[in-house]
Amino acid sequence: MSEIFGVPVQALMGQLMLGLVNGSFYAMLSLGLAVIFGMLNIINFAHGALYMMGAMFAWMGLNYFGIGYWWSLLLAPLGVGLVGILIERSMLRWLYKLDHLYGLLLTFGLALIIEGLFRDQYGVSGQPYSIPEELTGAFNLGFMFLPKYRAWVILASLTVCFATWYVIEKTPLGAYLRAATENPQLTQAFGINVPLMVMLTYGFGVALAGFAGVLAAPALQVSPLMGSNLIIVVFAVVVIGGMGSILGSIVTGLGLGIVEGLTKVFYPEASATVVFVIMAIVLLLRPAGLFGREK
Amino acid sequence: MNGVAEYLRVTDLHAFYGESHILHGMDFRVNRGECVTLLGRNGAGRTTTLKAILGLTGRRTGSVMLNGREVISWPAHRIAHLGVGYCPEERGIYASLSAEENLMLPPQVASGGMAVDEIYAMFPNLGERRKSQGSRLSGGEQQMLAMARILRTGAQLLLLDEISEGLAPVIVQKLGEVIRRLKEKGFTIILVEQNFRFAAPLADRMYIVEHGRIAAEIGKDEVEQKQTLLNEYLGV
Ligand SMILES: Nc1ncnc2c1ncn2[C@@H]1O[C@H](COP(=O)(O)OP(=O)(O)OP(=O)(O)O)[C@@H](O)[C@H]1O
Ligand SMILES: [Mg+2]
Image (cartoon, rainbow over all chains, first blue to last red; front, side, top):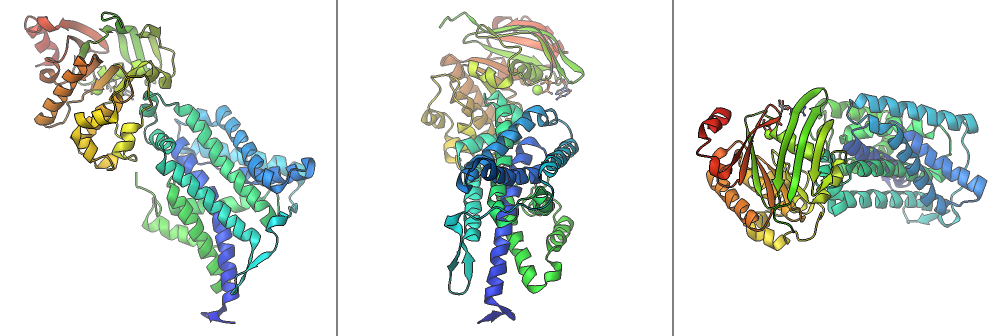
């Protein structure tokens, strides 16, 4: 078996794939955060909890109502999106004119409450959620075995991320969104219902997190803590990419997943910290992030 | 359409930004097809008047009748749909949108808006620069674009805030021609201006704004006779 820098190609490719899978989750979550921040000016700390909620909805759907994976992939994000809309209407909209800090504190509190509710019901241990039959097994690529479910996660995430990017950057609806982000008052004066768009944007952003949660359910265990474990890294990704940049958050998410994977191969001791080291360096050299614009 | 009907009537309009009380009972009207200018010194409250009509200030009291409807309590996004187009101070071109996206952004609010070809014929530069990012346009191009994008929507009442400000004389002259053409087409126009020389020949009536109130109204044919009054208010 061939080697690269003394590492078997099999192992290298395996970690690279795993890195891409993690990166897919980072990308979807940081994309949602970027979209929400751009439009609402709120750093959504509840994002991890809503990701967990997506996974829990899938698990609950299966165990209480017999709703399978594919339907969950559609219904759980819708459910999370609705929860998001309720949160926006009842709480967030009072904070838009205040400092970021208030939104951060409120959503942090919400994250604790949501997590607490699920912990109270389900404890902290993970619940298994099996991979749908169509996606069990692996492809034999010759140089490695690629588990089908991992390939699916990467494909689904890339599709969703780039579809989101396309809609925002290339369509009339996206032009409304960009206009409302840049100058909400004027956009309202043109007759565009900005408050409605803000509400739907938050709903969509958290639905993305819910979607990521359902994708994660079979890959990881479903547990009330899965969100808080992930969200810290995702915030580091957002800081590195630059808050509010759409393409930046996608590219940074995937890129950092790969970097993490490679670190696991070449210097495993640093794999848990490499993202934070990169964050520190980026903050020193480019405080606005790799893709962010200085204000 | 009735040629003498009022398009806009503002009565005892007060407006606030937070705690600051900016408009202190504005009273004026604009008839259909008229071009009216609001003149006044810096900080007199002219921009605030336009914003208050559009629902973009803080608290407001009094009355704003648009096309026969009381809109003082309407949310901002509904007002444009009564046929109002807004060209803000500083032009309000979106930097993150291309020139063409800026042009196409405002939704149709009434039928009978100008066709895109007609707009590009009126502002040839915009056609050439349609793919450019909004932030890359020159000041003159931005001003043309800010005007053009509200002509597309079918709006019949145009609120134009300081469109001549900071532009080269040729461009100001070109804008004057555009306003004249729009008047011929039957648009109703409110011109907020500092530039008396620009506004005076275009306006059917002038209002002088001072300290958030109308201080004087001057008809087109009274300009010479009220010259001293004008000098006093505007330092022309
Ligand atoms: N967002 C705001 N918050 C608080 N006060 C404001 C705000 N905008 C304007 N003002 C105040 O309201 C008053 C009127 O301002 P406005 O912009 O309406 O003046 P203007 O007549 O358009 O003058 P110009 O555009 O030449 O400065 C000014 O004293 C200004 O300081
Ligand atoms: Mg002004």
